[in-house]
Length: 113
Length: 115
View (spheres, rainbow over the protein chains, first blue to last red):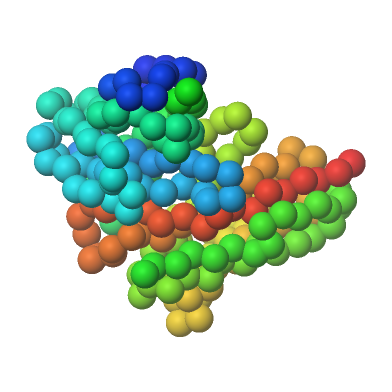
């Protein structure tokens, strides 16, 4: 089974802190993604990566950055956390093939106070 | 701007009934995904529809795709309580026939099936 592991299920941070969310996948997938999920808005793509050290902006990249130094690991960074970044963050990975199914981690619920 | 619209957004129904969730999208992609999310859990892939006219079935759920109408449906037959969940449809954000990109999701249909 594909496994996408997010390092924390719950995080509480203060405004202005630098926050790191970590994601690891064990299926040798080329592609990794970060989404945020908010009630009434569904999931929105923040950033994705199609290869080591490669990244592309998604639909809502402002206030975020990412890092992919190894194929299996994709980090989301909040440089200076703000209250409007309180959300559920979901990591996903996929293989580059015709089907492109994305496999999701369990999510990190981040609260910024 | 790519749009994916689901309706209804909320559905309460009784066990044994049939119902359909609709997903309209604005892209020309011929690839569409359905996911399920249980409360407090992550998303689980249900179906991937890869071409016009594609139909996939798993148990009491059946999904279909009409790329000309830019419409996908998720049909529930003789609903049971275990199917209570939120269902999302999604399309490739910038489908170009290959290569990676993220998905654009609908807002989800919160389905409650009452015994």
